Image 1 (tube, rainbow, N blue to C red):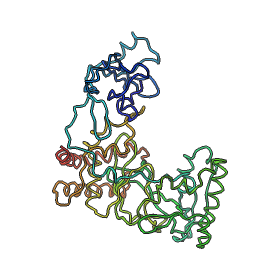
Image 2 (image 1 turned 180 degrees about the horizontal axis):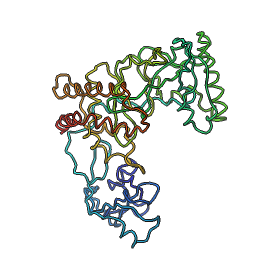
Image 3 (image 1 turned 120 degrees about the horizontal axis):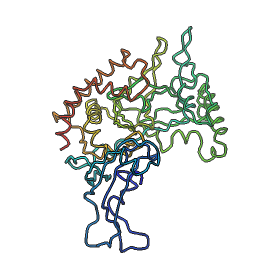
Length: 434
């Protein structure tokens, strides 16, 4: 079986034993043994396992569920695919273990780790975090400023599709390149999950977005409204966007226009432009990585000139929470970056060939409390978060990342740099969650 049966939500009923055979409703399965083969290579294209069970008569008076299963963890490198049993026995290590069944909030999972007894979850913040906007197609909206020896007009900078957006464009959009000028009031900042560092981030990415603040949300500006309002440069950009969208999508463009795609599930228009601080973390990855964005101060330095963004828009590769309280923002970021939090979510994460991946709102199943300014532990975490953020910002500004392109390596460098602070943070967080 795929190893996703250990933690994925679609296998929750299997783990709990809440199922019957289609026709034979008087019988069920009793799990007798479980083999974890995720560290065996080469094997299959996805992490795998073996579940052994007996078909037994169901006792309606016994509560369903499987507190523990005896099993084995198997690891090692096979000499070839489809190796014989004899070859496998010579190459692999087998460790006898016990898999325990655990429930954390809405999630269940099997793990060999000793379960840490925590306060009741989920977190106060679970319904308050949201996923960012689907700013796609990337080549339409992600831009860079074309430098000029004569300088640039910060109110009407010359733009073209960003290199990364072109490089990673889907086949249908490979030939789409935007060039032109757009009124600076439609320039916003964002970062992708691959720009996130613990307590910091790499450079912001500039995006053209046809939106304007409207009280506590944003509203979309269509081509027609841009024409009526005299935004002639945005008009030219949107004309090309609508034409390229129809050309690349074909008949599918009739079911969803470019504005509906950009604001799918209200990913942009529900974001609030009035908050000062935004806590963000990555939707997937081996490790949870969080940072604070001070929204009002996001700007771009281009050839010695400054272009101010109209705000920060969270991208769909991150989850975000807004607040006007600085201490709350850094308290949350510190908690999310703590090693113990990363350890606690590991058994709940789905796994790919490269290890744990999806995070989503799994971390918010933990009993992360609401920030309380009167609580000394909460204030201590906020202060530690601000100190870590200042340290990371100084490192980035001084060229610390250098030419390193691997975000995983950069994150390891930052965690090593903050080793002492993270140890202190863990001491506080562990006591808080119990």
